[in-house]
Amino acid sequence: MVSRIGSRALNRAALARQLLLDRAEVTVEDAVAHLCGLQAQEPQEPFVGLWSRLRAFDPATLSGLLLERRVVRTHLMRRTVHLVTADDVLAWRSRHDAMLRQRAMGVYRRELDGIDLDELAAAGRAVLADGTPRSMSELGRILAERWPAPGPRVLGEVVIATLVPTVQLPPRGLWRSTAGVQNAPVSSWLGREVDPPPADGTDPVGETLVRRYLAAFGPAATADLRAWCGLAGLPRSVAALRDQLVSFRDERGRELLDLPDAPRPDPDTPAPVRFLPAFDNAILGYDDRSRIVDDAHRGLSVAGERAVLVDGRVAATWTVEAGTVVVTPLRRLSRSDRAAVEEEGREVSSFLSEGEHHHVRISP
Image (cartoon, rainbow, N blue to C red; front, side):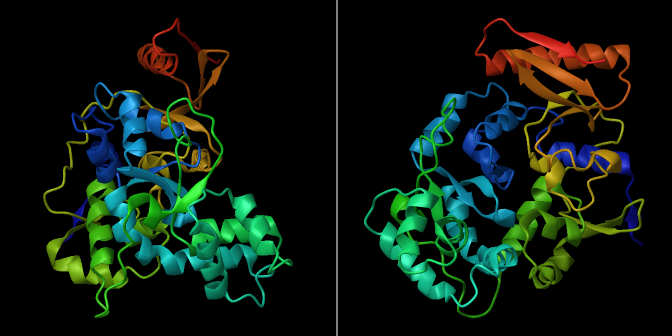
């Protein structure tokens, strides 16, 4: 008999796994690992994401991890820029190769017609091998001397984001840095090649991804898993792990899988107000996002809106205008909710302004 699980129980489970139900006392590096990385196409957003999840978070610690090469910025899940641990990019990158190529061809099939991607990858590696950090456009201009038709922009993006495992180098991604993107191969930056696929046809990385995803996002459906990572070839990994997992049915009748001992808090557990950064995986990490955001607003995070959680659900968006945190509700907030939003808003304003005078305004 498969147990049923309600949307509020799913919400509290997701908040607990995402470290949003109670700020965690773990290291920054351990938090990045537990969360399976953070979306980082906007370089400063991971700092807000970690501040909302960790007690006494110091942004200098994350900057230090980037400089020490213990975390990196790289194209990985869904071919988007993620902040992940060095260990994870080395272990996971090969498993994402086919997906990265497929997505690149989906965007640039016409421009890349007639080009051997393996030859393009080899040429890109040869350029990057001299140790000089390159922007996408710089690399693209060099490659366009051999393949002029696609143009430098396409060539540079395809090599950097798809064909050659690369990282974005600091100062990109450091606290309060506005540096442009300079890229280097993962192997030269970390001093080690990415792990090759196993020769025996097994998929231990796929099984690891399933477990790690459920630990950070579960209970979840296989469609949620695929939406998070973009990988199509995980059904075999799920099947291999089924005897080690528990299953539920949600209110929409979907089967949700989970780790047996993962936290599933009481649905009535209080959920504090939290300010989420743009593109936060607490929202984007699912195919069915109804556990945390109403269907009418599910596109907000894709559009880069920052969200405010009230009672565990997206209830407002927020921006910073001339030093003031401006909150725009998506529904009517009670007096107590407004007070809690204002209090947390002052805290995030203080964090962003490093303790300077801070203001919060809730739009009508």
